[in-house]
Structures are given as structure tokens and as C-alpha cells.
Image (cartoon, rainbow, N blue to C red; front, side, top):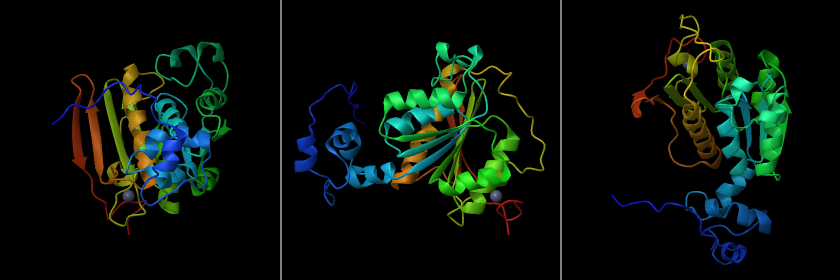
Amino acid sequence: MRPLCFGDTDTGYAVEDAKLHPHPQTAARTMNDNQLLRYSRHILLDEIGIEGQEKLLAGHALVIGAGGLGSPAAYYLASAGIGRITLVDNDTVDLTNLQRQILHTTERIGQPKTQSGKRTLAQINPEIEVVALTERVQDERLAELVQQASVVLDCSDNFETRHAINRACVAHRVPLVSGAAIRFDGQISVFDTRRDDAPCYACLFPPDQQFEEVLCSTMGVFAPLVGIIGTMQAAEALKLVAGIGESLAGRLLLLDARNMEWTSIRIARSDSCSVCGH
Ligand SMILES: [Zn+2]
């Protein structure tokens, strides 16, 4: 094992470097000079390069929930250059949100979370498109939005919405990055039913089974926990859009943030699943 370099403060990379030393099989095509600089630290990665960054710029992430998980997820999707983000939430910014919902600010209390989020994201990266939808999406509307997305991030806070999102993602074969966080406990997985062997959310949590509905709006949550899980959701979404590495499909990661311990559980597709089963 060797130490990683910390800090990441150097600025010794210029547009000319990207042009003179492009990623092996690619050359600067559609990105302008500012984009080559903005995304230079991605372009320098063998796994991404110019080609991968162009995939991100052509990507569309549907983020459902602009709260604790949606905030950090959207931050990194925007900064990393996902070309289009649709941010869906029907709530307004409340003082009790600000401890963890980092898209929002004190002066925006009372404003729709989607509008607040859009303003923050535009400051980070004005080159991407952010669509703010202040509504509670269900059924047909949800299906319509899911069909237009390259990846869906479930950053919602209730089982009903989670199952509705899963049904739409399974029906239209759009990969779903699902995160959850409450108290000191976090969960994250990917449900990518473009793969025939991959489970869906309902394989793991059958809709007819009774789970204790923990209302995130009234329970305690450790502030950075949503940052950890939401940021990982962004990482998985970016990997899926750029086509990098192995996703969390078929695995559920559980985090106990009290002891900062991770547990990885294999999850299988269920033939009897009411959503994706045969
Ligand atoms: Zn299933």
C-alpha cells in the first residue's frame, strides 16, 4: 500500500496539455477550451478521458428529492459535468433542513427546494442545464421523466415513492441508484435491470412486506451521513453514465457511522418479485 497524495491544490494543467496530450484514442472534439480546463482532472483519468467526459456531458440524471441525499448528489453531478439534471421535490426550505441539506441557505428558507437547488448548482457549473420540478411525481408523470433519463437517483424519504421510482425504472430499464440514511445508518445500492441477472429494489424490499416506515422528516440524522451516502450515489451515477468499472448492482452496502463500519451484502434477483420477476 502506498499513500495517496492529498490536497489537490496544484494548477499546473493547461488547455494546451489537454490538446497536446489527449487521452490515447480520443482527441478534443466537442468540448471548448473552458470545458477542457473545467473537466481536466477527469480527462486526466484513463478511465474517463475526453470520451468519458463527453458521455457525462451528454448524460441526464433524474434526481428525486432535493434534501439530505439529493443535495450532495446533485452537487457532484453538477460539478462533474452531467449535462442535464432534473431535480424533483415538492417541498420548501425549512430551518430544520439546513443542518444537512447543503444545497440550501438560510436566506432561502420558505423557497421551493428545487429553485434553491437550481440556483446553487448554477453557481457551481453554469454550463449544465438544471430543470427544477416543484411537484410530487407519481405514476405516468414519473414514467415520463424516467424514460428521458440516463440514470435515476432515488434521494426520496418514503417507501411509497421508492417503490414507484423502482417500478418506473424496471419498466423502462433505466439504472437506479438508491440511497437511504437515518440516524447513523446508511444504505446504498444500484438496481440496474438492464442486466438480466440484476435485482430490483422490490427484490430486496418486497412492496407487500411491512417495513417500519421511519419518517425522515421527524427522525434524527447525523449530518455528514447524508453527505457520505449522497456523494456515493453521485459516484455510482457518474460511473454508470461514463461506463466505468463495476457498479453496486447486486450488492447492498450498509454503513454504521457510529463505528464507521461498512458491510457489503450480496443481493440476488427474486423470481417471485412482483415488479421484475417472471
Ligand atoms: Zn425485482
